[in-house]
Image (cartoon, rainbow, N blue to C red; front, side, top):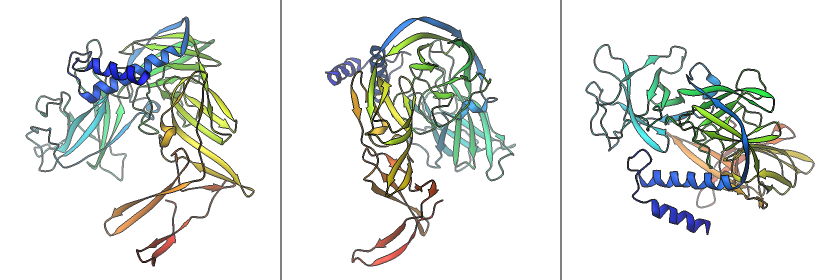
Length: 434
């Protein structure tokens, strides 16, 4: 029934314009409807109390607070092949400029960067914010050489505006570093900052526009794009009161993807964020719970969620979690065998059924993880050489690194053989940890 209802909603929305009054692509429409449907489902799993706090947040450039850029940056490769949608390029472009795309909200924008052929020959960057394939109507950004980078020729651009914005919301922006013209690192340029008092604590608070669309209310929806790229906006809350935002890969991080709930002490709070991030309203919330059954596996597990992020540790039979959708970002699995303790670490966030799973109210979600493992090899060619790597795939499709620990120490490197069609061993050796 839920799937049929979602389909009917999608069909009824066909041909409608976006909230900004512009026509949506089919992909943008599906992403928006999926986010709205999941947000609605989340609301049904909560009981909300009265307003506990209303906070006004000030718009602030983010470059001086480096910790707020540790979660959410985009690494984007470049290409010398001109994208077919580009109709014209600036007059001072050299024979081989490089092109890139950057993710802004639910769409990709194309950019170009190059060293001008005209004196004084600065390094420039343009972004096609209106997606019309023309750069002549776009802002020109001149790069500043970052001399601190010794191994690459790196230029800084910022802040790069991503468009005109939507009604009532300032346009989004990012800061970029381009290294050797081969790749860019794009970082959030602005945040909203303030303080909030909850449970007798006064905490420094920040919202980060990590998807560069000018809005600050983009909550996390599984699966994650990567361990540092959740594909949504970011919440920072200084829970320990030291005046800093700490980032860690485990449950102690004060910088997390924006979700519907935040936990302060033993209490959950619902956050209602204004589109432009100027105001956040906190309400006491009581979520409904379900259970995650990992079959008694001994784990350390970091989960991002559309309701409240979790860190699991130990070998319980089941874990009680707020109802919602979850994505596994980090997993350490301990297995005892023949008197030895083997430790496996997940190498790829979001792999298998752990990448996007649901906890339903009053129900148990069972996931079998770990051995027996399947070896998944991959090959990469570098000129005349071939690099062979492998992962260990668990029962849920989760991927573990080939680096395994035995009783806390690295296990010996595994050996390999390459066999031809006749069964003859063409080459043998041992893997090396890089």
